[in-house]
Image (cartoon, rainbow, N blue to C red; front, side, top):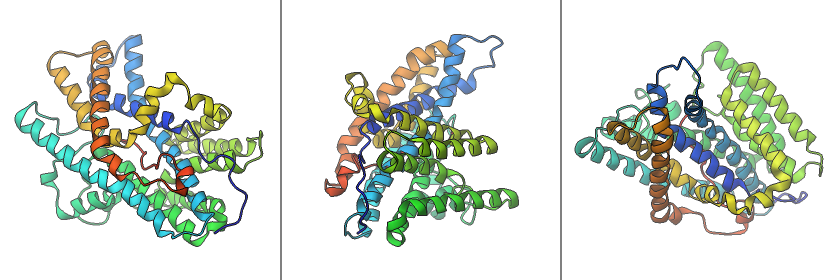
Length: 386
């Protein structure tokens, strides 16, 4: 147990709402992206073409999820290190929260593919954003990579090319590594959790540049810039709970330094994550008011079921796009006015059912940890790579 000042307010109340917005960004992206890729380059700008282009950039909801995960796991880790506990609990809770619903989602998507491919409209063999693979075509190593969430990097070393049954699971591969590192910090350096996180940040940047320079197999690992997106959330947590009251300049300074670095290496996803972290810092004084706004409750609902929405939305959204395209719903305006709303409605409905039937059974039971981690987060991470 670490004796240190208590965090001022570990729960950021409006994070569920933020999750909901980020997740809906991803659903919109996947529903409209096929039309975005099919649409010819317009000679003249129009409102509809600009809005359709905007749906493509909504894939940047993914870095938003990483920042939220960074904040939530920092809160969880801070809570654990402050009391005597079995550190294995941290890993056990992460495993229970992530893996069982993920396995059910693999079964769900496999059934969807079988039904749509053989009895309804032929489902596209590659999506607009990321390929998915027929589970019957995967070898033993590829299945092992999928089931252990190591497929994002396994292919660089053995067992054939990388093939994810759930294309969006690449984000869970990154989440898994972040959880492992934070768990190890809890075990070996609980008193200096934030300093240790800073050291890991420096290490990851160094490895990234060495890897790029010498073409080392760093893709899919936390030091391929992914850690920096998570640690942006850790910076926000530290500033909100331990930084000088009313003077968030240290937090802004670190995030601005990160932004300068992100612009320097040209990583749009890192720019998006750090910008979102700064938005969280700026909105913190109005957190409670935002969280209780009745206008934002639909987003909060989506945030509550966001892991289910993340796991199940891809085949639903892309199939909605394909079916409507088959029946003549084509072009920017029909896609924005018909396909996107239908894709959102179907995806949210299926996710809600999945939440009730599957995910809810694996939400960790309330305990003292819950005050820092509500709801017990896993995703968040969100869906497919920009």
